[in-house]
Image (cartoon, rainbow, N blue to C red; front, top):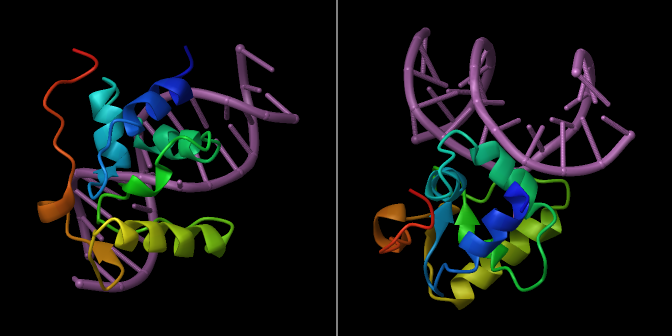
Length: 104
DNA sequence: GACTTGACTAGAC
DNA sequence: AGTCTAGCCAAGT
């Protein structure tokens, strides 16, 4: 099992209308310092992964090569009822809080 | 196995 | 609050 697969599995658990940060995903997988690697994994995620529900620690949409991807992410989030202010999600209100953790 | 590349972050200005 | 910097980690060369 590659780290990337573990990331995708975790992201698939994020419910509609909720978001998680790269660092949060990393922590859930037992690798609190691997936020950057999570981003790397998201770069090549399968279509069944709700990648748009992953934002950076500031609640914003991280920069990437194709700006189109950023716009799409904003659209998908709005469609799910996630409100953005100044291009940022209010993590206090929309952050996903899983009940159980996959690793320990 | 060393080196490079990012959809990252916390801390310092 | 915005910008910069130094660590961070997995993947692909």
